[in-house]
Image (cartoon, rainbow, N blue to C red):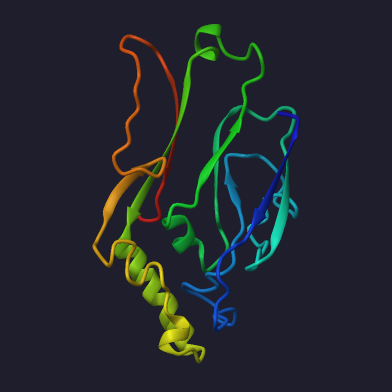
Amino acid sequence: PGSKLYLTVHNQLTPEKVSTYDSANGILRIDSTNIHTHGLHISPLPPGDDMFTKIGPGTSYEYIFEIPKDHMPGTHWYHPHFHGSTALHTGGGAAGFLIVDDPPGYLPPAIENLEEFLLVITHLNSQLMKLYSSMYEQNCKVLGGSDLDCHDKFWASGPLNGAPIDTLLVNGLQEPRLEIVANRWYRLRLLFSSIDV
């Protein structure tokens, strides 16, 4: 609490061949992104947590999150929230922790000194992602794009050659392992990210 977090986002997404920026709704603008936080009590104005900030392909943007001195410590999180591309970006696993540390002496020593594990649990549903991908492709074609121009190379064919996947990933792994010692306490920070549950 009482400090600033400087976060620079570098957008390395491939530019759209046909711009979908003239569409009003649906899955579109998949080449642009931004960051939105949950749990932080910070300014919604640029360069803070502004959901309307656009970070276009090949550009960067520096966020400045001013954490108030009286902000509660805890486990918070972020994900992309650029309108039109949120489902494909967040559904594809783009999310992460924002930890506001406990001030010294805030917790009882028995808890404060526990070994800590951060676990990002992501629900990956490739069939839903393929549906959203096809919605993007249709929006692109309505705006004059060809099949080749509008083809979403990642989700349209699926990450495993179209095989349906409906699974949970933990820190990006389908079958993770966490080795712990029996009869010992640990502190777990959990983040569950999903667009359909």
